[in-house]
Amino acid sequence: MEAVYRSETERNVSFAKTSRWKRRMPYVVAFSILFITTLPVILMYVWLLLNSFSSQMKHGFIPVGFTLDNWRFLWTNVEIASSVYPSIWLATWNSLVFAGVLTILEVIIGVMAGFALSRLRFPGRQGLLKITLILHAFPSIALLIAVFYILNFLGLFDTLWGVVLVKTALQIPLTAWIMKGFFDDVPWDVEWAGLIDGCNRFKVWYTIVLPLVKPGIAAVSIFSFLSGWSEFLLLYTFIISDSNITLATYLQKLLSDPNVVPYGLLTAVSVFYMLPVIAFFILTQKSLMQIHAGGGKGV
Image (cartoon, rainbow, N blue to C red; front, side, top):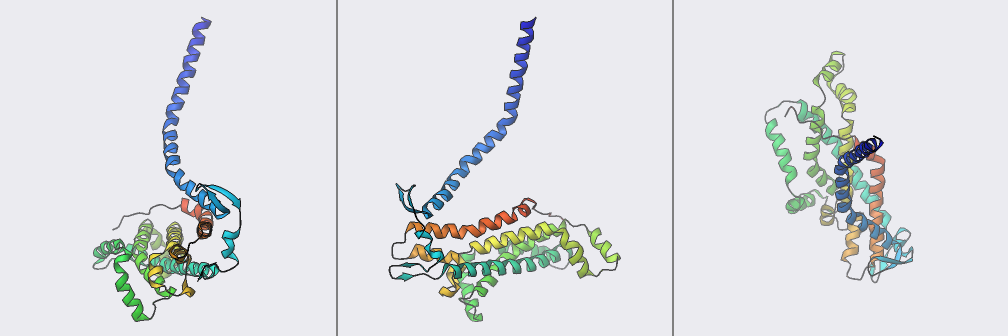
């Protein structure tokens, strides 16, 4: 009898273990795939970090010797043979100005345009919504010649403000569409209640509706800043002078220098370029986790 009871207990324990493994198996497979796919990216960033503090890399991936010489661009201008590079702090400031102004303009215009597309009914609204997405689908490189003539005519060629306006115009269609989705999720009853209480349309929009779409504003702000910080094509094409150089074009100068640029210096500048983005992500990750896609009703 005791042997039968022990055998039954062992079978129950074995069944429980099997069931537990079956429940965990999807998670094990998912995390395994995620680890395998992200491992090359993680190793790439680790290599950048190690190389930036190493005097050389044995066999291409084993760091040898610790040095801060690769980071000399932080306290002095880099000189390689006959090439003298601008201050990294000037490039950093220009990058911050470019990304910051782009974010402000894109959020202001995108929020107002999204609200108008969501709430106002006017002739041609359906066509405008479709054209909005089509405009965003145009690649920037297809518009370079036309944009050059426009900026040159306006006297904005080789200025950060000119490129900011171009980048804002290219980003606004998608921003307005995203914000429209968030405004669609706000019930009309909320606005009617404010109007009945004596608020005008602007006060209802500013004090009642905007607080309800804060996740959408956070999403647009974050992605606008990251888009501006990582922008290269427009800045490389329409910025010539070193006084308007950004970190993206600074890296390009290093890569295209006819002299041999040390990999250690190049990796150090690359790590420096990533640091503000990492800090920005850490500060905004709580808002990122609260972002949803927004509604699409009322189209």
